[in-house]
Length: 65
Image 1: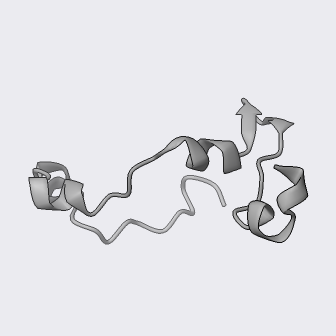
Image 2: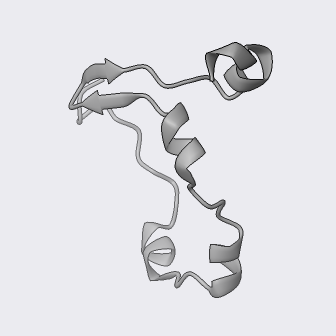
């Protein structure tokens, strides 16, 4: 779909941009710990460098730890 054919966004982007995030909203965001990054896929640009571990690898295959 070209830019001319694209449907307009129906969101109020000015209102969304003006929203200030509160401390309570930050509390809802989970902590990104080392385990999160160990499970993540590593990319350089569009190229996959390393596939991350699945979340249940440690539980189903404890010998792989």
